[in-house]
Image (tube, rainbow, N blue to C red; front, side, top):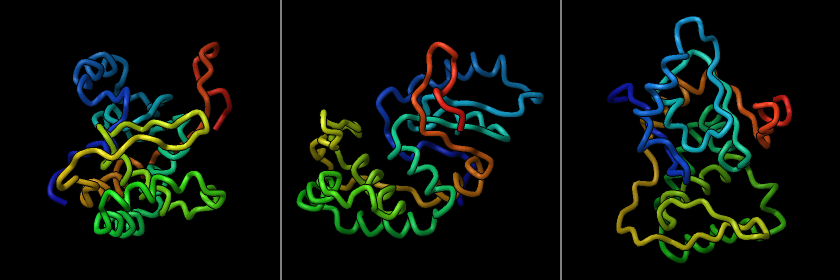
Length: 187
């Protein structure tokens, strides 16, 4: 691993990468040595978490495929790297549309978590503008982007997440309740 910097592994609509320095200045006012846990109710790509690097974190997002990616990085990083490399080697327009269509099949919900996470990363890095979008039926429907050689994953970054920040991170996959200011269900 070349450096300690961790960057988001997914592009995400509403992501805070571009404005993280502004946000960090505000958050850091409330984040000190006594802060035991950082909570992120709308995790997305994780730009703030990976910049703050708190000792302990609880992340949440309503998107189950997104949360599965980060759980898989934490618990099965080596398998995820191998599967993502496999998808990278198969990269083509035909492969993109084949893998995109998996969520239309009955067996999709029974997919191995590693295979599903690698699919999410692959689609995110090869679709148009990294836009995670589903139709009314809940099927991923973003067209393929016009990339010559997309950077699908960074092995060092995944390992840094696994052995670093995500080691002391808990995950939630709940809808946020605006009335009480936390996820609707305890996780």
